[in-house]
Each structure stands twice: as C-alpha cells, then as structure tokens.
Length: 246
Length: 263
Image 1: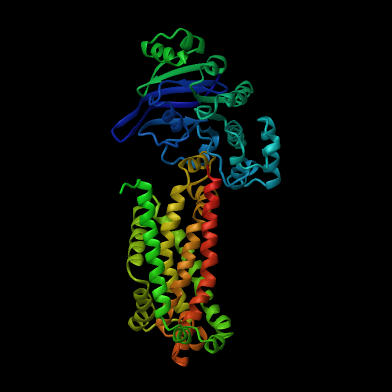
Image 2: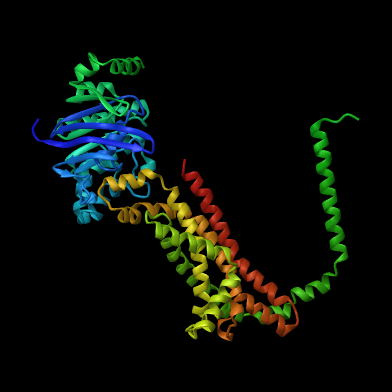
C-alpha cells in the first residue's frame, strides 16, 4: 500500500434538507480493494458517485490520481477518465452493439482509430468471457452478461480506479457469481477498486479493507475479518446480523 | 318479465343496431344519388384533373411539406435542447417561442410572416416556395420541439450518467448517446407530425400563389371555379388520403412494434 489514489477530505453532500454525507475522510491506496457496506440510505452510493463527480459534493475535496476534481478549474470530463464506473442497472447504451458500447468512448473521447478500438474491445470481451457476444445488442443479453459488458466498457478507458455501485443487486441470484468472478479477477490483477456491495462473502474474501457507513458517516473500518466477523460498533453488529440472517 | 343482466344488454344492443340500420336506409333512399354523384364525382371533371394534379399540385404539396419538415425538425431539435439546458435564458427563450407559435393559429402566423413582415419592412420574400415553407417550418419547429423533448426525457437517466462516467462531455453524450435513443422513441409521433404538416400546407395558398406553386388544396379550389362542380376538391381530398393513410398506418405499425420490443 503506497501512495493514495483516491482521497476524500471532509466530504459533505446534501440533497435539499437531506444531509446525506456528513464529513467523510477516506483514502484509498493504489491497488487496494475497498468494500463499502451499510444499510440503504446510509450514503454509500452517494459517496461513490462523488468520487467521479456524478454527484457534486456540497463541501469538501475529492482527489483522484493526484487531481482535485472539486477544484473549480478542473476539466471534469478529462479527470473522469481516471475512474471507471459500473452501475446497478448496467446502463449499457441500448442502441449500440456490445462492441460499440465498449468502443464508443475510445473513438469519440480518445479519438482512437476504429481498428484499434475494436481490437481493445475484443480483448476485453475475451477477458470477461463474452467474446462471442460482440455483435449482440444489450437487450439480447442476460443481466449478468450485460453487467460484464459494462465492466469491459469501463475498463476500456484504462481507468486507474474502478467504482462498483451495487453491481450485482439487480441480478438474478444465479447470475451474481459470474459478475463477482470478473470483479475478483480484476482485484487479483491489482486494480484499485471501491465496491459498494451487499455481498458479504465478496467483501470478506476479496476486500483489503471494509468500511461500514450509516447516517452519512463512516461508523467503522478495518480488515474484512475484523469488521464482518468481530464488529466493534453496535450499529455494525445490528446491520450484519440482519444481512447475514438472510 | 325477468331477464338476466346479459339478456337486457343484448336487447339494448340489438335495438341500437336496428335503429342505426333504419337511419342509414332512410338516408340512402332519400338522397338523389345521381345528382350528388354529378356534383361531387363527375367522371369528365375527374379526368380533367390529371395529370396536373399529380405533376404540379402534388409535387408542390410535397415540396412544402419536406422543406417545412426538415426546417421544423432542425429547429425543433435545437429548441428541445435549449428547453432542457441548464441555462435559464435558453430555457426561457425556447419555452416562450414554443408557447407563442403553438398558441397562434397557423393561418394567422402565415399571414403575419408572409404579408405582415414584407409590408412592415419593405423586404420581400425571394420566392413563393420560401414564403410558404419558412413560416410552416417555424411553426412545425415549435410542435416538434415538444415531441423531441419528450423523447429525450424518456431516455433513462442512467444513460447520461454512464456516458459522462466514460469521460464524454454533456454535448458529446447528448449527440452520441441520448439523441439517437430519443429518436427511436419518437419516430411514430414524428411521423404523425409529418402527416399534420402535409395537411397544413393547404393553408399556404392564402399567401396568393402563382400558377406554378399551386398546392393540392388550391388546385382543387381553382378546379371548382373552372368547372362549377365540386369534383376537383373531392379528387384533391383523395390524393391527400393517398399520402396520409399509408403514413399513419406506418406510424401505428412502428408504435406496435416498439411496444413489443420494449419489455
């Protein structure tokens, strides 16, 4: 664990009167896999969405790969390339084929040639086990396949950190394993990852560190074995008891 | 007498059918079909409409419609994007434009722009096609803007977020991700706008047209004056239907298909 790749300083976010994030300080080292757990409404998705500024923080600072995204002179479109995001609802572009979903940002943002972009797309599809689906359209794929394409699409921009926002929550239970498998491989290859998840097994086995959020603050953080198996805080214990019961 | 609810319904329905048939029969008996046919569909007059009604009048109607539609679509797209913009002056301008142009009858707008502006400024329209097509496009743009806006708003929010998260600017995401999907959604309503536009071209002739720029409606009306018979208008109506019915059917078909496609 060396230099911090993501750093949040006193991050606040309000939606009107609703104070969702109440002063978050967090650093994530290069190569670290951080799982964020907590009840719904605890602010964990908002926290993740502040890292690539899909939500504009109301206070505090966000640094990614040494660039302050919250700085008023920051070119946010350029700075966002350092982060890749995977959404709960996949959000594949429904009018584009699987290959074009992956290459569109390469061609339109990085101005890469089509042949180079296609080669990168095919390599990524191979990696997520969907090489035969390059010409398919999102609607023709299962949820698990769509989510693996979405991961490939985010990876295409070669981000230095990947953000997973409940990536398996919208999937049928039997499809969750494939997506978690891809995420696990990614972690093993050394990708820096921030993962908002309800999958305690994944958090326990893959994460380097787990943070538990509730009410817009980080309540507890530590090694997964400690936070999940021997939580210190009452709120963490109660949440885990509820989650692990099911 | 005791009847079930179902029996009573059947009795009422049978009565309505019988009355309708009786009324139709009365109409058929009382009308002088020979005279009506002679006034509305006289064969010699029908023949006299061709080929000019197709080579000239239909052609002009299509020219007005297509230029009105292309202009209206470009303007509508621009106005829709302005209405959804973060900038207040843009939103305000677009909303005001749309309200005004949709609130005034096309006939009045045509007269103001076609006659009023030249009288007020001394400027004159370069040719009758432009004089007719420009006001038509300006009004069509207001209607199409609302259709396009609805289409853009129907694209799920996550599409914009995914595009932005990949490093696309707002404009780039709009052009490559949102608008193409919005257009898929609005093809059926846009086809209906096109049909409305075909019919609206019939008003352009109030601007006074030359022999060369007669549209279908004016051609029919002139035909009535020439032949002292209403047949030319009926023929013009039939030519309109030959244009509009296939298009409305196409729109209905596309609508059904898109409903099947989306789960």
